[in-house]
Length: 50
Image (cartoon, rainbow, N blue to C red):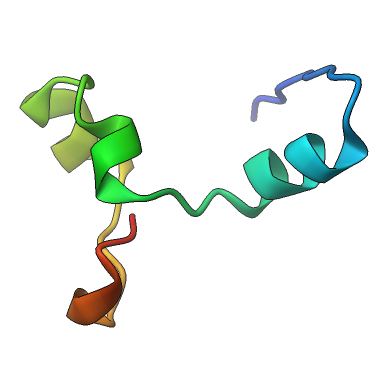
């Protein structure tokens, strides 16, 4: 079990992070091995989301 504590001035930004849905270009800097281990692609391939 683990938890992540995040803070930001904008509650909207925190809500977006809590959803855990990101555009593929935003996670591009993450190594391929880590993405393969921890991320899932969206079922809707046209949206380019993970």
